[in-house]
Amino acid sequence: MLIYYFVGCRNGLLNYNQSYMTDKPFKIFVVEDNEWYNRLLVHTLSLNPDYEVQHFFNGKDFLNRLHESPDIVTLDYRLPDITGLEILKKIRQENSDIQVILISEQEDINTVVDLLKLGAYDYITKSDDIKDRLLNTVQNIRNGIGLKREISSLRREIQKKYSFRQQILGESPAIKGIYELIDKALTTNITVVLSGETGTGKELVAKAIHYNSKRKDKAFVAVNVAAIPSELIESELFGHEKGSFTGASFRRIGRFEEADGGTLFLDEIGEMELGFQAKLLRVLQEKEIVRIGSNKPVKTDCRIIVATNKNLKDEVKKGHFREDLYYRLLGLPIELPSLRERANDILILARHFIRQFCIENELPLKKLSTQAQKKLLHYPFPGNIRELKSVVELAATLSSGEEIESADLVLNHDDPLSTMAHDDLTLREYEMKIIKVTLKKCNNDIKLTAHMLDIGVSTIYRLLKEEKD
Image 1 (cartoon, rainbow, N blue to C red):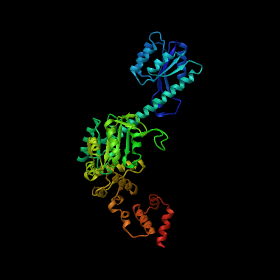
Image 2 (tube, rainbow, N blue to C red):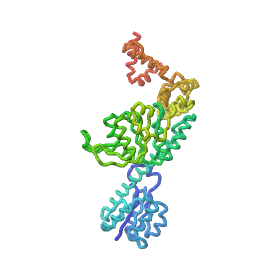
Image 3 (spheres, rainbow, N blue to C red):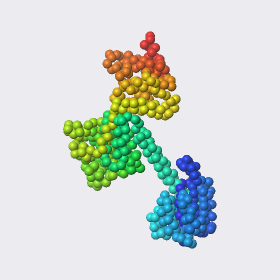
């Protein structure tokens, strides 16, 4: 009985993942002692210019070249010197990524099952359509390998992106202290409690911890507790079974199961209703959830990171947060400093955001003038990093030169629009005041003003004319 294996990747005739196709040819090793079939397989596979095909007539010669890590191997089960089963085991030991397609002249189900259990990708019976079957199977495998490599590449990019010393920028003592705490968080699965004012970058820190930890290859799942209605929070976190309540037309996997093996980030944990906190406590203690409408517990293994802009200890005293849940979450506390506490980090972050914004919007790179720098350093930034980012992005848009001037920085305390609510004006007068303030910011550029206010240019001309008349 003749049996063949193919270890392969996707058919290069497809345009899927072109960059991977052109990186290097796919190596295909044909191991077949039947000369006619050897030539047939080599000829069929060589029709694709992306494939680099080598052929062998015995197992020994093939194994001497296995270290070259071919992408595809065709293997005759009954070779004169060694069985295909032994060679398959050696392939698995040498390179577990090699996929296997079994080809045989007859259907020996028991043998096929055994070989598939050992990692054979597919089984093809020799027939008139063997060429098409072979190429289709190789194509399917190559699709899978291309996708797997693309996912690996994306994961590497994500890990690089969230390297916290590259993304959490600053040189102040306050931020260096955060670096040290993040380093400690990476070595264990301890629960992390992130606290700090709104806009200090709590989710960025949570991602940095996840993507630099042992769980980096699994999911990071973020849930904003404050954004979920109380009647939906249980379904959101634990999931539900089909028919468990009106409108449950299918089974839904909850966020705990989504994050299995990875990290679950519960933002604004202090906003969670008291009634649901007891259920969350049980899940954290037992490490299992029960979907709504089910009695069957499902084990979960996810790291918990929570964030809050409230003082949870004070919330416990007020009766708004369960004391037992508070102590269950009491892992590694990381309190993020406000921007006011970070001194010259403001300028480091501002330059970073300006550069990023200019690159993304294909604008010339801009610098902060001396006066603009002073203005930023003397502003308290109640919205912290989030506010700083918005301020400098608007300034980069308004700036007409190579430098961002002080006048381009629109801050809350000197924005005329912020005081208009206190004026006793008609609707038309409000409209005119908004247009005039925006025109001033845009250096009287009517097109830019219209774009910023999302109105027509003709509307601005008409209102200005009516006021003049």
